[in-house]
Image 1 (cartoon, one colour):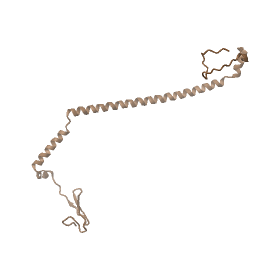
Image 2 (cartoon, helix red, strand yellow; image 1 turned 120 degrees about the vertical axis):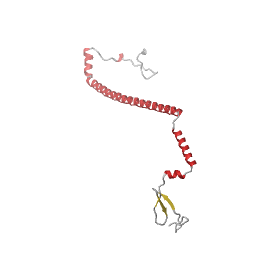
Image 3 (cartoon, one colour; image 1 turned 90 degrees about the horizontal axis):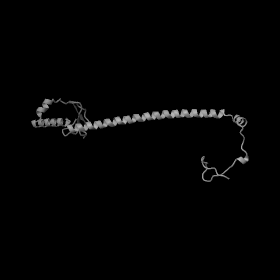
Image 4 (spheres, helix red, strand yellow; image 1 turned 90 degrees about the vertical axis):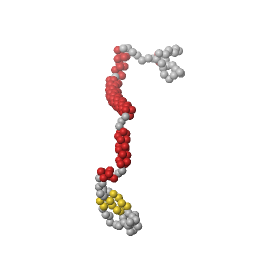
Length: 173
């Protein structure tokens, strides 16, 4: 148990805590539950002086004034809301446009891959369908073509660049 000065027999300070309308005394002694008597608002208001009641009514009036929205604040709030809404809508439009373009690019890349595969297949068919012996036979027998002789072939060297331009003048020897 606690003594008058607030200390228990063992020298510990007793503390009181209120929890759900019950008061506990902490210490080495067994705890005793003390019921706190409920206090009614009307009784509290009667106990308060009249000046205190006036202050609370003033406080209430100030709180009500603070909760009211004046015109400049309302205009500023509406402008900010409209700007935010405009930015959000534009963001969604840009996002949608970007998504559509990415889908279109993927579709075009797939089409390009399929066209390249088809082109490679056709090129392979062309290369395998050409019989060089048949071409030689037709060229020499039907068209009368012959191989060029050694005196008909002229070689020349161009020192300016490593390639030959098609429409450049051919040097004479």
